Amino acid sequence: MDSSDGIRNSPFDVFVVIVLGIAGYGMKRLDYPSAPLLFGFVLGPPVEDHLQRALLLGHGNLTAFVASPISAGFLLAALAAGVWASGGGHGDPANTYRCSAKPLSCRLIRRSVPRSCLMLDTSPAHV
Image: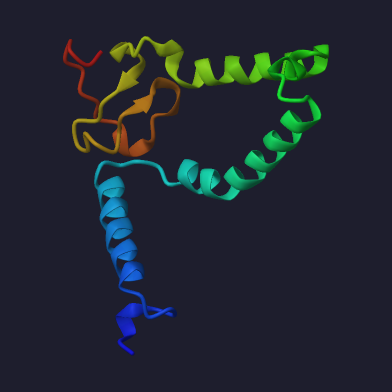
């Protein structure tokens, strides 16, 4: 048994590790946050189970999610939070700063500029 084949002695496992390593390197290089991906892996299966259970209880009818005012309020709050987090969907470049020293890692929302980005690029294209 070769040590690179893992527990099941499968070349597929080695291929998966290589592909995920390349994907992880790309995400690190492009400065993608890892927390949302981790939340998706951890919370994805329970959310799917509970959604399936809710659809079974509602006999496949999606209006069961908005039948009571409390559930409709939670859905509206989640929708509003998603729209707010995405910046309203218009992608206005005036809402972001770009650090001249680290252009990939300092594209931040205006209210959370770290001390490492004190030298900001103030050219008209970025302000």
